[in-house]
Image (spheres, rainbow, N blue to C red):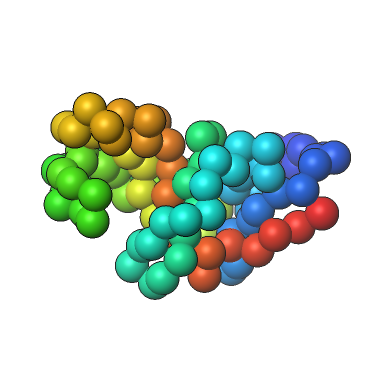
Length: 107
């Protein structure tokens, strides 16, 4: 049985199962859009399963991305930027887009 970590910082968790997904300290931007609407860009995410990578045409260009899912309940949360083909978008590489509708902010 895995131990549950105790967090001293605000964090975001899965709306369905409350599995911790990302720390507030890893939030890079609140100005993104995803399938269900507004989304956040995080530099790091935890307790997620990364799916198969694929090239996808998004609003700011073509990227190699992989959908991400909650490791506890399997809810699709957003995607991970694997590769940006446009040099001006390289800052997104390795980042995680997580849909606001899929997470809760906890303290």
